[in-house]
Amino acid sequence: MLIAVTRGVSPAIADCELTHLERTPIDVRTAREQHANYEAVLAGLGCRIERLSAEPDLPDSVFVEDVAVVLNEVAVITRPGAESRRGERSSIERTLQPYRPLAHISAPGTLDGGDVLVAGRDIHIGITSRSDTAAIDQFRSIVDDHGYRVHGTTVQGCLHLKSAVTAVDDDTLVLNPEWVDADDLGDRRCIAVDPSEPEAANVVRVGSTVLVAAAFPRTAERISDAGFDVRAVEASELAKAEGALTCCSLLFEASAQ
Ligand code: CIR
Image (tube, rainbow, N blue to C red; front, side, top):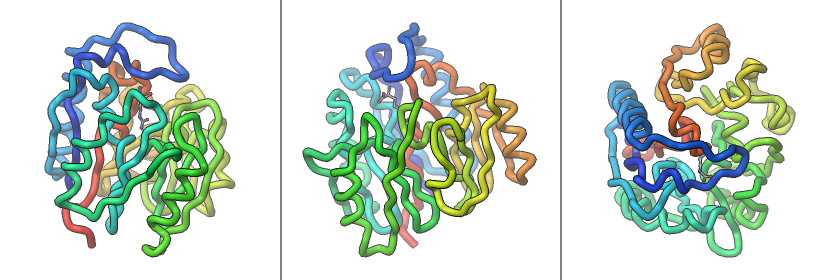
């Protein structure tokens, strides 16, 4: 059984952190509708949704991905790079406790889950304004015994590594070659985003289905042409908070295999 941990959209989302985007008004109701639809799509694909309630004082807390990285063997609670996001951890910790042993990134390291790309036994971690090499070293010591290879990866032009690249299966990546160098990501098949859709690389794989933001039909076609079952999901309002599709859930098998 696949679990999807989500959290309702904060009424304070307009005060979100922004790094590469200009602030524009966010309609909370529309954001909530899109988020509810995202959850419904995940549920329709067989996920059990564990929804945490919205946090009025934590503007970015809908983006649960940044606060933990859930592997089969362990869940790593991060130390988010933005101080305003560190209060998101305790509830996520409580939620994950029944499912996995927990490990923690500690100060002075900082890590956002959006920077952690797991592809088979390779874990690529973006070195960004949110995630640093001290945290990457900590992460490596946590997962080393489980047989993962951890690589620090340079990213430019976007917030997180997973803004630039995500995996649609263990051997296939969707990426924006302007933001990350494919040669840093091992010997994998790469599907490049359509050049007119630079933000399209953030896709969610659920079983054999790939969710792509509805704003990126050309990249969706490329992924479909590569043999994947693609589903468009509207996420334009959450995108104004610099969040994409992977950010809105923590997806993992209930019992580790
Ligand atoms: C932030 O800057 O932290 C939020 N406004 C957006 C986080 C998006 N998360 C992600 O890409 N994993």
